[in-house]
Amino acid sequence: MWEEPCISGSKGAGTVFFSGCNLRCVYCQNKEISRKPTGNRVSSGRLKEIFFELRDMGAVNIDLVTADIYLPSVREAVEAARREGLGLPFLLNTSSYVTVESLKSLEGLIDIYLPDFKYFHEADAQRYSGAGDYPTVARLAIAEMVRQRPECVFSENGNGERLLKSGVLVRHLLLPGKLIAAKQTVKYLHENYGERIWISLLNQYTPNGELAGFPEIDRRLFGREYKSLVDHAVSLGIQNAYVQSGEAADEVYIPAFDGRGTQSCAKPHNAV
Image (cartoon, rainbow, N blue to C red; front, side, top):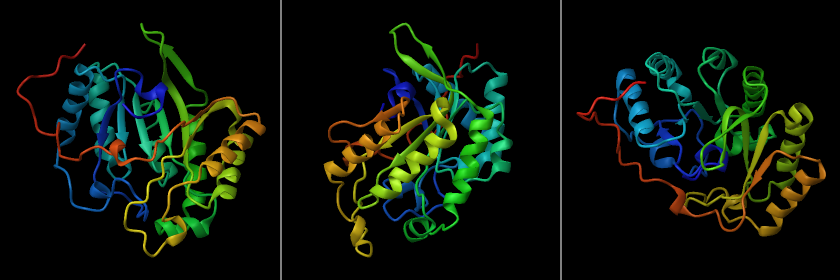
């Protein structure tokens, strides 16, 4: 229920979390599954069944979170679900640390790209994620996503909600003390893609208790930092953006990774 309003709607996104990550962000909130051998092994056939089960629960899309290192198997499951008439948009919720070739293999299968743009500078990418080439890789990846889905298309459900049906929505999480880099990131996105994409500015950074070696980011954001970033986006003339109001930095928004939903159920899915 806690994605952007055009992703979750009132019924919620059908979120599938994948264990393991090709980045090692020191501040990771999902470290329980990104770094540890957590989760249950499922086949691509079982993954396809999970998609249908989420649809039957009322999900408005299938939200694939950190599936980057599993894309060949994910592609197989998505293709099968589409053949069997799933009828929901597929969303790739990604760090953007993924090759253009991998993204090209998904063309026509992923309706919505929800990429992070974590770092503008190589030094920050190396220090906090061990990936100094991240800014270059992410720029190329986002460019490919926009090539595939060059504009955002919305649909309205019976409740008058505008749900994203196709397109690219880029997230940027503001880190403590990194306001200038964040402003550079927003400016870059706006100059290159204008209003063809949506931008989501996040203030939900939460220290994870493992940042003794990184004192500069071992704190919550100051309200003035986030306000300055939002004001900068407004000054650039950005129209299509989400901002967070109130207190969004809380571990209550981190789900319990208990493997629920991975086990096969006796009831078969109902294809349409």
